[in-house]
Length: 232
Image (tube, rainbow, N blue to C red; front, top):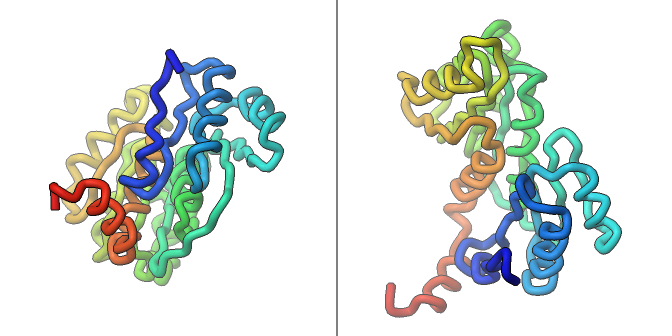
């Protein structure tokens, strides 16, 4: 379409359609891409970093779409898939909610069961330790924190599950827009902690979904083998 080449094949390869990153695109471009994906793909559709005016323009053509203000996500739900395991999203503070909700909603739209545990930062660690049952029952944990980003190390030292750490740009001057939290998480002494980019809730939700469905992706694997027979 001139300004974009839509990857319709992604739903077959990865089990979820191409996601629209709205920042930097015009409203008309987002609408056009959304329309093409809606026509060609069968699964849920997701648009990230979307402003309300973009949502209203899409809603005029697709009244069933939903908008999540805090996470700035546009969602078109057309199917549901439940996995046996579930994902727990933990945020350090209320200021981290936009990124935490972006992660949680991304995972939900991809068919996962998601629980939330918010405002449990290290300044009041008892709030986290009081919910050890939730930490232990999750298959994958997403930890969202700004400031010094210490929460990821704390959680990583308490569980035997994969922990996806998300540094946020929340903090005062010396946090350097999330760089301080990013470096703390990268240097975590807790084992099993992986780190995504600053404020990248979407990336964390997507990765958590991929981990959560590892035991239940036989259908997807068979599809890929059919698409690339010479590779397997």
